[in-house]
Amino acid sequence: MSRYSAINLLRNALGGHRHWPVVWRDPAPKPRYEVVIVGGGGHGLATAYYLAKHHGIRDIAVLEKGWLGGGNTGRNTTVVRSNYLNDESGSLYELSLKLWEGLSQELNYNVMFSQRGVLNLAHTEHDVQSLRRHVFANRTQGIDAEWLSADEVRAFCPILNFSPGARFPIRGGSLQRRGGIARHDAVAWGFARAADRLGVDIIQNCEVTALKREGDRIVGLETSRGEIAAGKVGVVVAGHCGVLAAMAGFRLPIESHPLQALVSEPLKPVLHTVVMSGLVHVYVSQSDKGELVIGAGADTYNSYAQRGSLGIIEGTAHALIELFPCFSRLRMLRSWAGIVDICTDVSPIISKTPVAGLYFNCGWGTGGFKATPGSGFVFAHTIVRDEPHPVAAPFSLDRFTSGAIVPEHGAAAVAH
Amino acid sequence: MLLLHCPYCGPRWEQEFQCRGEAHIARPEPAAEASDATWAAYLYLRSNPKGLHYERWQHTHGCRRWFNVLRSTLTHEIVAIYRPGEPKPELKR
Image 1 (cartoon, chains in turn purple, blue):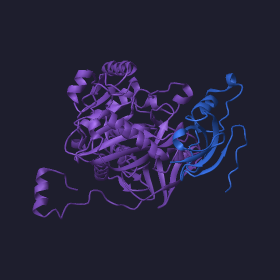
Image 2: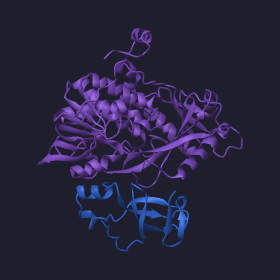
Image 3: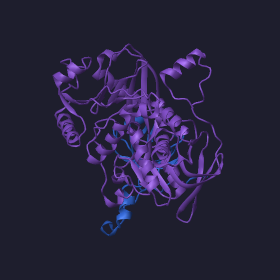
Image 4: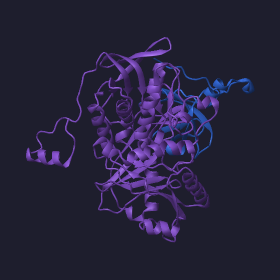
């Protein structure tokens, strides 16, 4: 498979772009793999990539019930940042952010990672104290964070609502300049292409229907494309993790909810950064196509339906025009929902399970996209060594029994 | 948008309510004697089914009272609504 480079682009241009090779193969499943990853989203593909790249395992399959990146990888609002509160979270998301910074080169695939900054707004005295606390926490963690006064926020993003009559006046904000956005589909495709190159079989339209055990050990899977034996199985299925856990005979501290988002009609460049507000509850950035990508909230009810209620969208629209009165005449193109796996302490689970050889990576809830490379990196280690990667150790399932939970409820302002 | 029949107020639109999670989770008694695993299961573990789900709702912007709902998490169809303390409706398979 040819590398993407200026020379190859030129060579293919001369051939009318008719001779580009397929980006990844479409293999039939083999009867057995050393490691099977369930879930062909960003996290699953990243896990397979790092297994092959760093741990020398080439006998790997990624099983995807639909198409690559068709779940939450293709449904999120593409925000990347690492400004959480707890040290455990800081280590995990900062590991991921560092991987993002070199990801396009690493994968030889342009994931369009744009470090345009992430601005969290403070509207009340409590917001000010909370966000300043985050800034200080992030600095002790070695993560870049700045506090901006109201005037500095206004200079940084002048289209925000600074009118004297604003219902939610802006009193300042925290800024992570290294944060930003990336092209979500490209992340799935880039990891898929790079993993395929290392010999990983990516098998789409292959739904897992049962997990096969011998005693306390996993030995394989039943799928819609036949039985597959496996030495180890890593499950990375986001909203459906509870369904897979039920197949394995245990429950998780997780509930699945719809999380909605929407995009506007395309505009000329108007918003150069990511703006979030926890108080009015909206987050927004502008894509390279010009659309505003707007993150809404999670519905309160459990659902697997990939749709939510209109009230959430309405509330988000209210919040958006409160922050940006100039957006009030914008038309929205479409809205959608992804099914997110919200963990009780709003932190992920990267863990061994009660079944030997079976590993779960789930609970990323409303904020998994930013963690894609880091999640795959630590999960690959966890699978190979049969013990958690040091950065993933605080995120084991046993934290719910020991009480050492990693509460990130208020930590992320609005979006994770 | 769901239409919920509050057992106290009648049919109201979903915006008046909040879903409060899985119903029929009994607190281990006596709590002081529950093992860590039992207590963790009570606090954190959820069935999270794909299909029919027993759940609690609160009429937050109405009477503020709580009630139980049997609802599909796949179609959002509401199968039954009943008051706390009433027996849980059996699933017809």
